[in-house]
Amino acid sequence: MSNRRQFLNRSALAALAASLGLWAPGKSQAFSPYRKKHNPNSSKGGPVAIATWDNRKATEAAWNVLSKNGYALDAAEQGAWIPEADPNDTSVGYGGFPDRDGFVTLDACVMDEHSNAGSVTFLEHILHPVSVARKVMEKTPHVMLSGEGALQFALAEGFQKQNLLTETARQAWEKWKKDNGYTPPTHDTIGILALDQQNRICGACTTSGWGFKMRGRVGDSPIIGAGLYVDNEVGAATATGQGELMLKTLSSFMIVELMRGGATPQEACEEAVARIAKKFPGQVENGSVQVGVLALARDGHHGAYGLRKGYSYALFQHGENKHFPATHLV
Image (tube, rainbow, N blue to C red; front, side, top):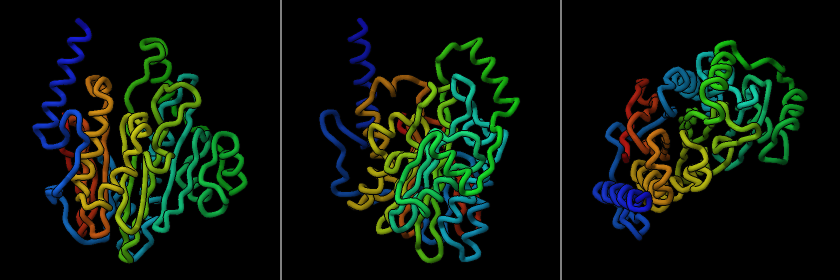
């Protein structure tokens, strides 16, 4: 009976996606010919700052850099600072929910227009991991530093050690231990992409990860190609939601490569989410699992798509800072 139910569920999912023109059972989706479908909120022209979820304060901070002829990487970094320092944001930085042992651990990465990248994983005690990731990119021969080594590097670079566990997050952790055992909840991430007036695209991604996760867990956010990918010849992409699914599919890299092949940012985002749904139908059937992706092309057009209803994004372009719901597969 359970096998029959799984078959029916998967068949229903396949029929839904096929009806949307995203993929057909037994075949990988190919936009051939490309429909040149654009996001209804998308338009040409820069500069642009775009971020996952309703992070309009972050896109505003990024725009303040871009509007003064600033550098896209500075814009992305300073945009990411906003949620990293917000004690009310329980998914990023200060105020983020701890792991199941009560420790706040942070992941972040940056990528510039030359395909240089920097990343930190499993970093504790530092308010702005995105800036440590940038230092890794600019001042070391490496791409990624982790754990104690990342902390040592941050302290050597002048970052200050501090307690990131707020009283609100501590109380949530205590309640979770009592009520939920070790079943982790869903979580959000900020990915932010910026296009400056010199047509340089850069990006940043930062998170405190899966709340109450197993100690040592690292998600997609600091992994180049999963949580973030930038290729200035084409564009950039970032992801949020269930990080393990993005890790298994390298969704951000996939989106950029689909754009390289001629897909619009919106088509590429839809294809990436559809592939996740096709490859992991059991995960998709779990109503609590969310995936959201963003893409930004060199001409200023963007794309956004979610696995299910609820995903949204912030866009600052043409002097206006707006929040939009993203279209979705399920």
